[in-house]
Image (tube, rainbow, N blue to C red; front, side, top):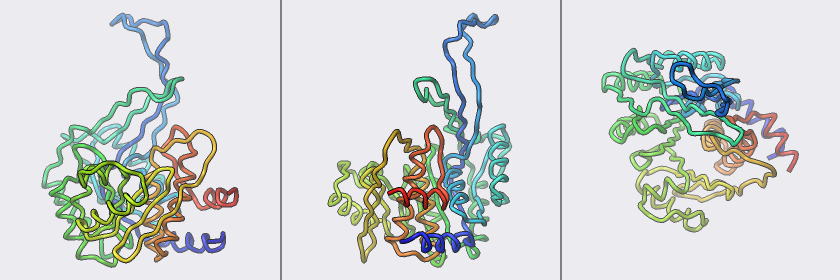
Length: 331
């Protein structure tokens, strides 16, 4: 795959119509100083100092910002946010990417916008503070989200399904509802990434890592290629669809009923940050398949994109065509 071929693929990607349903979150970073010598007049406890607050899209939102960075210009999101400060920030971030948020429900009460709050100290990331872990979405709200998705699917080329939070938008019964839609719209390429309920997905390509596939199959975790192929075959028999397995430094494996293909991890120097790399793989692979790339070419693009993002420290990074071309030229 030479630069002109890669550029041609990305020229097609920009015309894709892409949908994302799942756990949209905000990643909120700030620098934290915990030793200040200042005591609060009210509590007599030491005052911490914070600076440089920044917010970016996390969870399914990180998938969205990766899709946008890779060039797709028509993106629609399906899910919900709270009527709170982080929800308003998320809308702002989506608007900056020109994402269609008409099917993103704003829930007035009982829903905290999913947020990963990440204080950064001189020793790295301190204890994370998460919002949204106690959310409980009513069936009424979920049914409306499914209805909006059903109405949009005839016009979508790609749909990505994402679940990350413990009390999520999507659980096993709700994924079963989505399975019915997956079966009805075979022309739309669908890829699911579910941290907790991957075994409930049917008919969509399922992205997993080695820990997740071992948990689904109740077997030992292994990064050995032969074991990963065997486990992927077992999972494929359950999901009735291809399996995409990320193997860290060992690369990415794709198993379909008719073929098995893999790409090896790209050797990289210096410190790495793997946060969000799986989202990059999901976005890049799905877009490549959306423009009818072969499985191997889609794996290559996903592998290069992930290699770009893991070199971006203390952020949920993205990869664009120019960065992928630069990395490819450096190897």
